[in-house]
Amino acid sequence: MAVLMWRTLRDADASVLRGQTVTHDAEPHHWREIFAYRNVWINTAGMLCWVICLVVVSAMIPSYLVDFLRIGTAQMGFILSAIGIGASLGTFGLLSLSDRIGRKPVMIIGALGAGLSLALLRQVGPEPVLLFTLLFLTHFFNNGLVVLTVGPLTTEAVPARLMTTASGLVIGVGEVFGGGVAPVIAGFTAQRFGIQHILDLALAGLAVGAILVLGLQETSSFVLSRHSAQLETKRVDENN
Image (cartoon, rainbow, N blue to C red; front, top):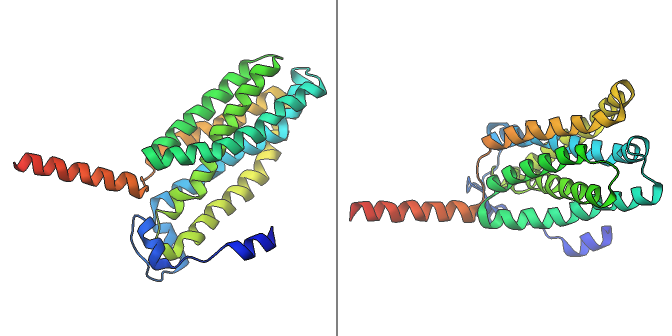
């Protein structure tokens, strides 16, 4: 992978990347200036929510299936395959959709979709096909949220020279706290209240994230340009 990246990846010039941001700014900036942008704050908190769901469900669902639902090992393996399949397809599916209808609408769809899928999964008994489907949908939507959060919604919201710094902050905070603290809380919850309540923790994270995404700033240049063109057309029509 290192050799492949060395041979393939190229650094992009800030003057080129400026066209992909809402600021259209290619000037040098101090790294602390990333905190002046609303999306950075919201995405940092949102990343915690998505990672809590990702880590808790991925790490604890085997025990939930075997110890609580009494599902056999072979069936458990089939159900768990939904995690990788759903996450892979969600990465491409939601990002592609966001190019067409905008980042923020897709984030709202993703948060609601992941939350509804996980809420339904909590109600399902030892039914492998239905559990596979709902686990697939949970990770389809949740992984799309992760990639949109650390990618375009963060990098497009800041000046070109702050793209990687802003994305690194969002990823770092999410992984350290969401990936490090969430499993500890999930383990305590399982021991104290029962393994079935671990899904409540993941669902709570998605619920908080669904509220946070409402405050995001749209960053898709295509959507913003289309909106500006519509406003201009409306203005011309009104003047005529």
